Every structure is written in structure tokens, then in C-alpha cells.
Image (cartoon, one colour):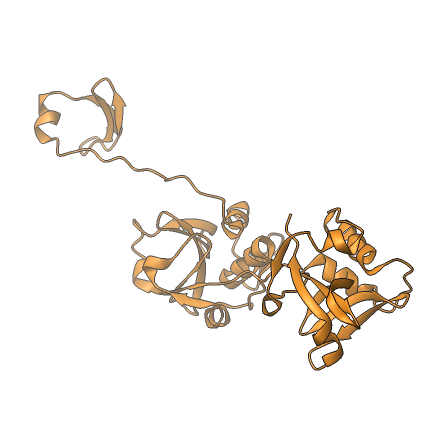
Length: 282
């Protein structure tokens, strides 16, 4: 390693020590080149990597699945994926292998899982720079460098990546909880209340202004939490009812003095009245 001012630090062959040497004619004669290594630090942009790092040094414990109990190989991965990514993985490596999507060694990214042969299939969290965090009998939860290890690379089986579940829409959850409750306000005021309670957003309280919020989306693009606008029974392009989409053809709205959830997939009455959908983004 270069120290500057023509000095290097290195291990000696004879003395078995680390020493500092001056770049004299001997070293210059044997000099072959320079390499610079970037991005060797551990990156925490993936929550599974972060959580795995937090439990480094935890003792190995057969059947363990928490910092208090200790960890076995499958328990470590199950713990960090749930805590960091809110992904519920099965308990054991063989079961975890059956989940997710198989990826090649070249496609692996931080937070993905690598699997190795052992007495059973051993999962490990890939943390970048050809390194993994894995629960080992000898060292507990430890970082292993696959570049220098002679034990792990020959036992490599494959890798898996796992999709994080979509976060539940808070406004839709609230609307479902209010189903059947009496409500004296307008349908637009109900939507305004949902977004204030759910995400702290302040939306207009009139249906005309609410219809100008967010972005217009095609009806077939509706997702849980999007807004829907319906014309009156006489048709036209004037919205008379605002609702929140709950998924699977259902919506919730303030209708006739109470909150009601309606199924519209096969109901021509509502299908004909539907004007548009809108998506609210922060």
C-alpha cells in the first residue's frame, strides 16, 4: 500500500512482519503497476444489508431466529428480511430457495440472497463487493469475503431476489373501517377527511376542485387508493359523487348519509355514471 513520498507498507517474507520500505532501485526494478479500489465500504442503501450488519457478531444458535436467541442460517435471513424489508420468508433455507425469483451470479445486487451447499441449504445476504453476511458455527453472524474464501465459493448453488410487498394504502384502509358509519358531509368532504387522516394531505373539499387534483388516469389503470368521479343519474360530464377505489371493482363513498362500499363490476348503474379516475401524489 502506497503511503506517499515514495514509501510503501507491506508484509515481509523473511521476518513475517509488516514493515515500511522506501521505493529504492530494488523496488522500482520489481514494480509492475498500480491499482486503485473504489467502493470498498459497506453500503446501507438496502435495508436487509443494514439489518444484517446490526447483528454482526451474534452467536450461532440452532433454531435461533432473533438477536436474543442467536441465529441459525435460515433464522438470520428470515429476521433481516422481515425487519428490513417487511418480507415474510419461510423459516429454513430450503424453503427460502423455493420463494422469489432466481437470478444469475452477474445479476445479484445488495440485499439479494445467495445459497450454498451444507448439511442443508445455507442462505446468506449479499452485501456487495463479493461479500456476504451469513450465520456460521464458528464465528456466529459474520462477513465472508468470497474473493479470498476457499470454503464458500465451491459450495455456491444459486441466488434469489425477492420483491417487497406493496405498502397498504392508508386511505383505503380507513374507508373500509368507516363502512356503514353515518356521515353528514358530502362525498368530497369524506375524501378530504380520509387523506388528512391517512397521509396528512389537505385536499379540496368541493367536488369540482377535487376533480382537478392529482393526475387523470384511465379507468383500467385504477389502483387501490385512487379517486373515482361519477356523474348524476341524468349523465353529463358534471361530477356529483367522489369515491375512493378499494380494488377488485369496489369503491367507498358517502352516499345518503352514510359510508357505503359498493361493488360495481357488474352494475351497469355505476359503470355508466363513471366519469374518470384520478391519482393523488404527494
